[in-house]
Length: 338
Image (spheres, rainbow, N blue to C red):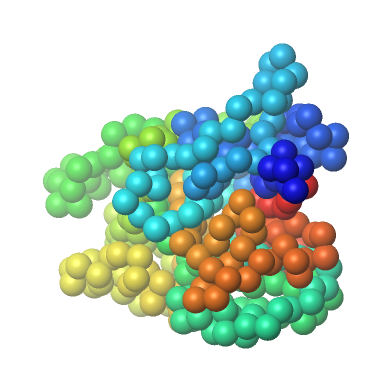
């Protein structure tokens, strides 16, 4: 089969604030893969954010330009992939429109139809669960899925108050002006929240400018959860008990345990996830990447090579961020070969 006749990868994003067109009438809302300086704006009644999808050696479908011609594929993101084994990345920064606990928000792969599982899939799942012990899955149901709490699933999590991303942030927690600065930020954030509330659900929430393309990557920063409640005020105080997640993580900070591995280990405990609150006035940035998938062929490479496309029955792979009960979809990225 000629290369031009081979099925090509497409990457769709939902809900895209400004849907794109494609030369293939079967496709819409395509992301411009590897364009990490120009993220897709996603917006619905639950979430507003910027999203970028990267694929190493990408040669798939692209949206149309202003002249209704397909854009040239961006083959790579050299600053992101160079020196790393990772083969793809889903990167996102945004705000939830209401409060959710850390146990409510799930991220993973979801399918709409039953699949025929290949030999070796059990070994692949066991390997994946070693990487992420919080993983939950059922691949034998009519709607198969593999997912985890988003706080455990993501390679990188960066958390900052909205105003800290829009205006300069205090450089150190020991600054004598920190309490005053944070109170001012909370007041200004409250004003922004009032403006956002007046816009209605169809208009995007206020977001800081996208700053994670090119040489600038999302870095792990979960110190917001570690700031004591007296600093941030009642808005950020955890519920349920005096010994909340903030105080416990503050102790972890003093022991220099604030990285991704410690964050994942901490949130393996359901009690810790339920005490963590996603706040509308906070910007959450995530990066999910892996060296074990060739996205251009939808092939898993975990010691053995499994062509996932052969077992999907023509259905796409969907990365979804949704509520645990499945009733709320925050955003989704759909990948398939066409």
